[in-house]
Length: 204
View 1 (spheres, rainbow, N blue to C red):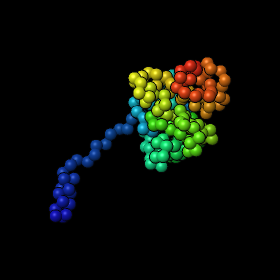
View 2 (cartoon, rainbow, N blue to C red):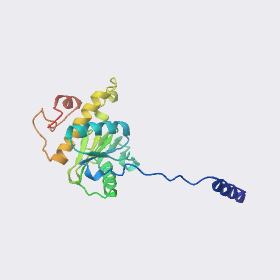
View 3 (spheres, one colour):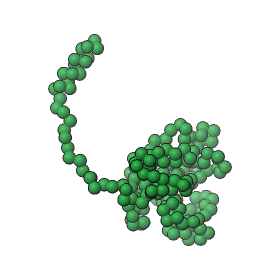
């Protein structure tokens, strides 16, 4: 029976034409020119692309994006029912090194819809976790999304809040700004809840 299958496959393959050779496009694409890399992790590629375009226009520099990064069991705490930002950051760091880059060559932003915390769980939750030595931040939409509190969906509000969090991370890692006491600045801190994000400025 196995011989019959092998013969059938061989005949099938021999009867098919070979894969068509095509010209490869987008040869000028160069992520090395970018200042920031966005990595979606269980996050919509389409939405990440829209956010990347908006950030590029505002910052006036190149921002590149990697494909969706998978999340594994070791990134999740079943006890706390939250993802561990440190573990997500480690995987993102490996992806960066696989691209031939070093830490802090670029600012790296990992976006996820999942609820996050740091490995010590000293806080109830985190909007974002910053890893200064790697110039990398993990940012979550879980606590800025009204739908997760049983409120009506508001994608515009979530995007506005998310861009503020991303801009703060870019401020920390790329511009090397410090956390500010000026509530008109996106660098303001501490941010204790979603309402605080709505009150602060969106730029530096």
